[in-house]
Amino acid sequence: MGATYRQKVKGNGSPWFIFVSHKGKRISKKIGSKSEAKEVAEKINAKIALNDFSIEDEKPIPTFKEYADAWIETTVPATCKESSIKDYGNILRIHVLPVFWDMKITDIKRGKVKDFLLDKTNKGYAGSIVTHIKKHSFRGSK
Image 1: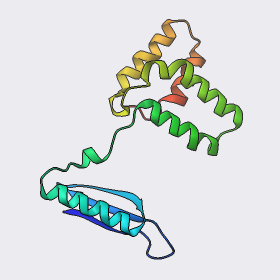
Image 2 (image 1 turned 120 degrees about the vertical axis):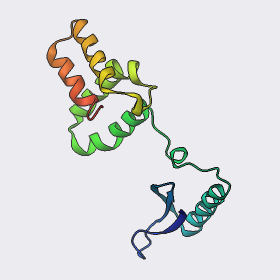
Image 3 (image 1 turned 90 degrees about the horizontal axis):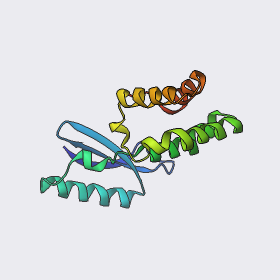
Protein backbone atom coordinates (compact mmCIF):
# COMPACT_ATOMS: atom_id res chain seq x y z
CA MET A 1 0.00 0.00 0.00
CA GLY A 2 1.10 3.52 -0.64
CA ALA A 3 2.46 5.64 -3.44
CA THR A 4 5.46 4.92 -5.62
CA TYR A 5 6.88 6.68 -8.64
CA ARG A 6 8.63 5.46 -11.77
CA GLN A 7 8.63 5.64 -15.53
CA LYS A 8 6.28 3.29 -17.34
CA VAL A 9 8.94 2.79 -19.99
CA LYS A 10 12.45 3.26 -18.66
CA GLY A 11 14.67 5.80 -20.40
CA ASN A 12 13.97 7.67 -23.58
CA GLY A 13 12.88 10.74 -21.60
CA SER A 14 9.56 9.09 -20.80
CA PRO A 15 7.39 10.98 -18.32
CA TRP A 16 7.25 9.90 -14.71
CA PHE A 17 4.13 8.49 -13.09
CA ILE A 18 2.88 7.94 -9.58
CA PHE A 19 1.19 4.66 -8.72
CA VAL A 20 -1.07 4.56 -5.69
CA SER A 21 -2.46 1.41 -4.11
CA HIS A 22 -4.73 2.08 -1.15
CA LYS A 23 -7.55 0.07 0.45
CA GLY A 24 -7.78 -2.34 -2.46
CA LYS A 25 -7.97 0.36 -5.14
CA ARG A 26 -5.25 1.52 -7.50
CA ILE A 27 -4.66 4.57 -9.64
CA SER A 28 -1.81 5.91 -11.73
CA LYS A 29 -1.24 9.46 -12.84
CA LYS A 30 1.26 11.02 -15.22
CA ILE A 31 3.24 13.67 -13.38
CA GLY A 32 6.15 14.80 -15.54
CA SER A 33 9.64 14.96 -14.06
CA LYS A 34 11.20 12.57 -11.57
CA SER A 35 11.45 15.25 -8.86
CA GLU A 36 7.78 16.22 -9.26
CA ALA A 37 6.70 12.57 -9.12
CA LYS A 38 8.79 11.99 -6.01
CA GLU A 39 7.29 15.05 -4.30
CA VAL A 40 3.70 14.01 -5.12
CA ALA A 41 4.32 10.43 -3.96
CA GLU A 42 5.80 11.69 -0.67
CA LYS A 43 2.77 13.95 -0.07
CA ILE A 44 0.36 11.08 -0.75
CA ASN A 45 2.30 8.74 1.55
CA ALA A 46 2.16 11.40 4.28
CA LYS A 47 -1.62 11.69 3.86
CA ILE A 48 -1.94 7.89 3.99
CA ALA A 49 0.09 7.82 7.22
CA LEU A 50 -2.27 10.39 8.75
CA ASN A 51 -5.28 8.40 7.47
CA ASP A 52 -6.28 11.48 5.48
CA PHE A 53 -6.28 10.03 1.96
CA SER A 54 -8.92 8.63 -0.35
CA ILE A 55 -8.42 7.56 -3.95
CA GLU A 56 -11.88 8.93 -4.77
CA ASP A 57 -10.66 12.39 -3.70
CA GLU A 58 -7.81 12.11 -6.19
CA LYS A 59 -10.05 11.46 -9.20
CA PRO A 60 -12.45 14.37 -9.67
CA ILE A 61 -15.57 13.47 -11.61
CA PRO A 62 -16.08 15.81 -14.57
CA THR A 63 -19.36 17.51 -15.34
CA PHE A 64 -21.11 16.66 -18.59
CA LYS A 65 -19.95 19.99 -20.06
CA GLU A 66 -16.31 19.32 -19.17
CA TYR A 67 -16.51 15.84 -20.63
CA ALA A 68 -18.32 17.04 -23.78
CA ASP A 69 -15.83 19.89 -24.30
CA ALA A 70 -12.90 17.47 -24.06
CA TRP A 71 -14.63 15.08 -26.49
CA ILE A 72 -15.34 17.86 -28.99
CA GLU A 73 -11.75 19.13 -28.76
CA THR A 74 -9.91 15.81 -29.00
CA THR A 75 -11.88 12.83 -30.27
CA VAL A 76 -14.23 14.44 -32.77
CA PRO A 77 -11.57 16.31 -34.81
CA ALA A 78 -9.51 13.13 -35.06
CA THR A 79 -12.40 11.03 -36.36
CA CYS A 80 -14.88 13.33 -38.12
CA LYS A 81 -15.26 15.78 -40.96
CA GLU A 82 -15.53 19.51 -40.27
CA SER A 83 -19.29 19.43 -40.96
CA SER A 84 -19.78 16.70 -38.34
CA ILE A 85 -17.80 18.67 -35.76
CA LYS A 86 -20.11 21.66 -36.33
CA ASP A 87 -23.20 19.40 -36.19
CA TYR A 88 -22.13 17.77 -32.90
CA GLY A 89 -21.32 21.15 -31.38
CA ASN A 90 -24.76 22.47 -32.33
CA ILE A 91 -26.55 19.41 -30.91
CA LEU A 92 -24.71 19.81 -27.63
CA ARG A 93 -25.17 23.60 -27.44
CA ILE A 94 -28.85 23.70 -28.43
CA HIS A 95 -30.30 20.51 -26.97
CA VAL A 96 -28.09 18.72 -24.47
CA LEU A 97 -26.01 21.21 -22.50
CA PRO A 98 -28.98 23.31 -21.32
CA VAL A 99 -30.24 20.21 -19.50
CA PHE A 100 -27.11 18.27 -18.47
CA TRP A 101 -24.26 20.81 -18.48
CA ASP A 102 -23.58 20.98 -14.73
CA MET A 103 -24.36 17.35 -13.88
CA LYS A 104 -21.52 15.00 -12.95
CA ILE A 105 -21.24 12.32 -15.63
CA THR A 106 -21.71 9.62 -13.01
CA ASP A 107 -25.11 11.13 -12.14
CA ILE A 108 -26.47 10.83 -15.69
CA LYS A 109 -28.29 7.52 -15.74
CA ARG A 110 -30.20 5.78 -18.46
CA GLY A 111 -33.57 6.90 -17.05
CA LYS A 112 -32.61 10.59 -17.21
CA VAL A 113 -31.48 10.19 -20.81
CA LYS A 114 -34.68 8.35 -21.76
CA ASP A 115 -36.79 11.07 -20.12
CA PHE A 116 -34.81 13.76 -21.95
CA LEU A 117 -35.26 12.04 -25.33
CA LEU A 118 -38.96 11.40 -24.67
CA ASP A 119 -39.38 15.09 -23.87
CA LYS A 120 -37.80 15.98 -27.23
CA THR A 121 -40.22 13.59 -28.98
CA ASN A 122 -43.18 15.05 -27.07
CA LYS A 123 -42.13 18.56 -28.12
CA GLY A 124 -42.52 17.51 -31.75
CA TYR A 125 -38.96 16.86 -32.82
CA ALA A 126 -38.70 14.32 -35.64
CA GLY A 127 -37.64 10.81 -34.68
CA SER A 128 -34.51 11.16 -36.82
CA ILE A 129 -33.46 14.27 -34.87
CA VAL A 130 -34.04 12.55 -31.52
CA THR A 131 -32.05 9.52 -32.71
CA HIS A 132 -29.28 11.84 -33.89
CA ILE A 133 -29.17 13.56 -30.49
CA LYS A 134 -29.05 10.19 -28.74
CA LYS A 135 -26.42 8.69 -31.01
CA HIS A 136 -24.03 11.62 -30.77
CA SER A 137 -24.51 12.74 -27.17
CA PHE A 138 -25.08 9.76 -24.89
CA ARG A 139 -22.87 6.86 -25.85
CA GLY A 140 -22.61 4.44 -22.95
CA SER A 141 -25.08 6.11 -20.57
CA LYS A 142 -26.14 3.75 -17.78
